[in-house]
Length: 182
Image (cartoon, rainbow, N blue to C red; front, side, top):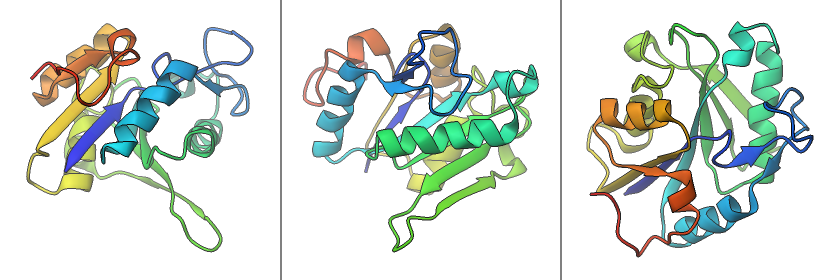
């Protein structure tokens, strides 16, 4: 299995309004170069998931339900992404998982992820990355794994999880067959 974990804000999506952060679930668009890279990885058989800090919830800029709807909108805009893990608190205590499974109703599902990595979910902690690897790969490490992000805390999370990291700006110009950092 090949697992691609993507940071979202600034890596995959951005506010349509050009504000600093997405404040309304519909105020987002997929970064065009990111969409191209995602399609390329998907065509090469990579499983793709998102991992995003959502400190706006803890700061009171948005409600938890807004953050949940924001993730679902991203999944609708970029259906190649299987699911999104997000941490809404500064302490890294909680992680939510949002998925849209292909059913007759295409019902969205969201749930709080287990306490196993509590205290490490917020990047630069490795909790969301570890949860993604465990949830999608079981206890075996994927034959190929990559975490892509645009901030120092993304690189820190990859280091803490002991997985390869690639800067978004480099990833946008790469393809699955080019050299990776491992």
